[in-house]
Image (cartoon, rainbow, N blue to C red; front, side):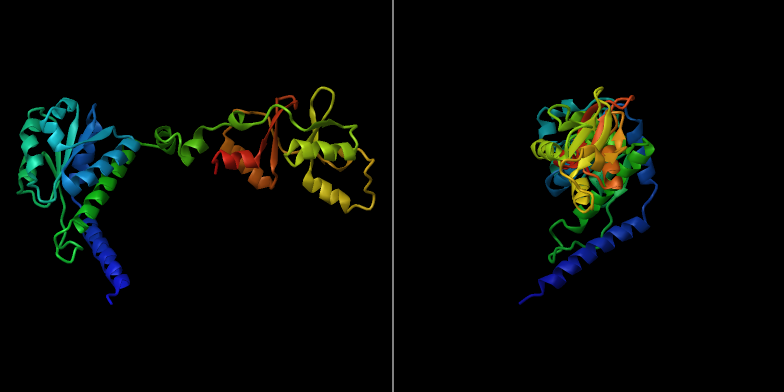
Length: 321
């Protein structure tokens, strides 16, 4: 029986070796490519066929999500009308490990007619793609991880990694920030942290509110019906005075002077943690909840009047982390 664990380890080590070897010999072509792409007013079109095409599509997606407008164009589709998608303010990144992929080479003369930057990724500068390229990024590997040294493995991994490196260089060049990234990913966790505000999640109606003269027994009923594990104690003007949590209630039960006929206010937390701005980020509110180890955060206006509440469960359900 073959030792597949050892085989897998060998593949990973070989691919890692090729990446490190390229890193040690990276040349000024990355500077040239970054500068050329950063200057364009249009889009970066990525093209390639086969495995290179699949890698190219991923590179285009990474670039598009990190501030460089980009899309993938298949060479065959380009030869049948989609060349019209390339404009005079664009640039092209063409990928072919051999540098001789027939479908790709056929469109290169037509791309050159646009007089736009053509960046090539291939094994040799002497390949057809290399000769057509204005900027050439070499793909140097000693061997593929495939035991037949045939299936693209190390070469595709290297191409993908160089695409990532180019994307990061462009992010640095454009001073691309996490706020910019989130704007392209509003449904992701980062987008939620940067865009969802307290007012988007807070509860404002049917809150478990009692007065400072409410007896503890009635407060417990309100707490159960409110399903928030807390009751909010306000005065006649709706100014928040205190919060009675289930934790407060458990601590009260341990007191020698505990009485069910006492006012709930007696056992409640006076000066509870609140915020007076519902426009702050929900992620900031979560930070306060975690800092003070509470479950409920009350939201008031600048004068202390209760406007709503935010429960940790709402934040969790909304995916705020």
